[in-house]
Image (cartoon, rainbow, N blue to C red; front, side, top):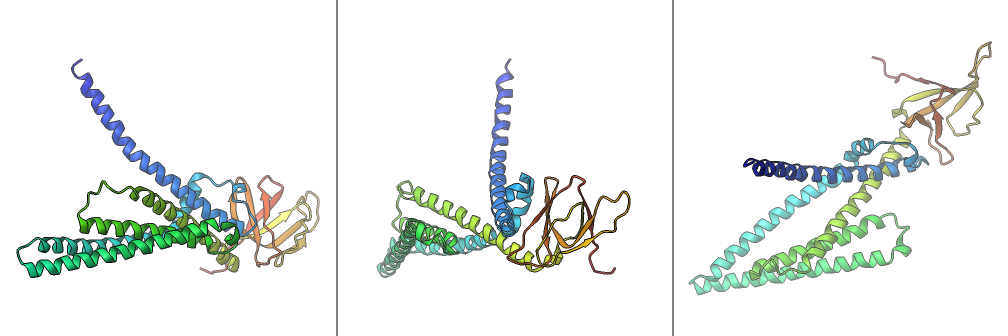
Length: 307
C-alpha cells in the first residue's frame, strides 16, 4: 500500500506531460485545418465549386495548408528575428545607461540620463504611432459595410490592428525598461496582446485565401498541368464550353457508350466523383461533375513528353 501514492503520482505526472504535448498538437492541427480550408475554398470557388461538395478529409486540408502558410510564416519569423535583435540592442543600451547614471562620474551620469530621457521620448513616439494605427484599424472595422468590396480590406485592416498593437506593446515595454517599473502593473498589455494575436490570425487567413485564389488563376492559365481526360458517355451532355470537342462513337451491338468528349482535364477527385474542367479558360465555362458509378468511361492521356 505504501507504493500506491507513488504510482498515482507517476501516472498523474505522465497524464500531465501527455496533455502538455497533445494540447499544442491539437491546436496546431486545428489551425492547419482552418488555413488549408480557407485556401482550398478560395481556390475551388474560382472554378465555381463549393469546396464542401468535394468531400475532402481533415488530412487533405492539413496537407494543403503548408503552401498557403509558407510565405506568412517566413515573414513572421523574419520579423521576429529583426524584433529580437532590435530589442536586445535597446535593452543593452538602456541597461548600460542606467548603470552609468548611478555612477560617481557626474558628467558621464548626466549624459546617461539624457540618453535614457531620449529613449523614453522615442518610446512614447512609438506608442502614439501604435495607437494611431489601432485607431485606423478600428475605423476600418466600423466602416466595413462601405469598404467590404475593397479587395485588400481583409488584409489592410488586420495589418493596421496588428502593427498598431505590436508598436504600442513594445513602446510600453521600453518605457517600463527605462523607468524600471514593475512588470505586473500593465493593465493594457493583455488586451493589446489579444488584439495582436487575433490580427495575426486574421491576416494569415486572408493570405491563405489570396494564395488559394492565386493558385486557381495560375492553374486556369496552365490547364495542361492537370491530367488530360477523354470522357465517354451514354448520352449527349451538350457541353458548350470552348475547347471541348464532342464526337459520336461508332454504334455496334453491345455498345453502351455513344459520345466521346475531349479537351477536359481533371481538376480534383473526391467522394467518388471527378471534377473536370475545359482545357481553355473562359468566363462562360463550367465545371463538369462526373459520378464514378459505371455510367461513364474515362481515359487518362499520357503527358506529351517522350522519354
